[in-house]
Image 1 (tube, rainbow, N blue to C red):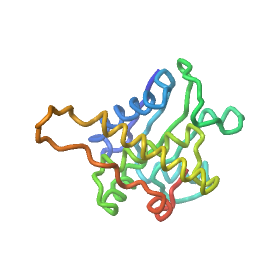
Image 2: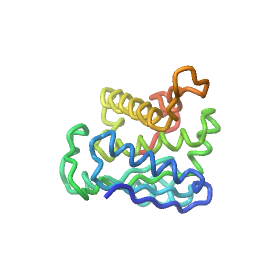
Image 3: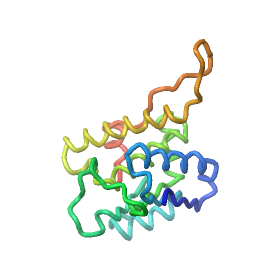
Image 4: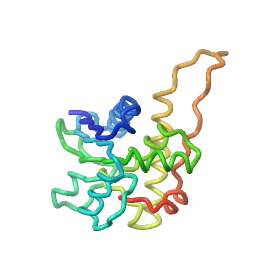
Length: 187
């Protein structure tokens, strides 16, 4: 139960602890804390092979999702009503560290923030969200993505006492419909 994590590229190892923590928090925030999630951080070369083999697109992409829920041959589930059954596999989220780091530079956001955004995006695809289905679904998905990012920001921000001058949590950036469309977001 929980998060199975694998990092196959040196460029992603420094982000492993935070990504595992974020993945576990996503399970909790969505009421799926006893389900299973597989998360892999890979190179552009590896994600390109996966994208070619499973989507017939011979190019690297930022994130791929392989839903175990959809694989069972059922229609996409209601992304808000999945049962929290012990050991229920949700699927695999695969993130390219190379592409994520490149996008972070282009968007002017910290790499950890970009990796978190891609994790959330891929996770929502596992739950049945699909921004390519319709403009209305895209709005719902990106709104939920922003809400989850804000919840994870709150969870990871050190608690401060009144009058404490430590940095406050900033609003999540780097995941807007326009940015995702410009980048050719993969599913």
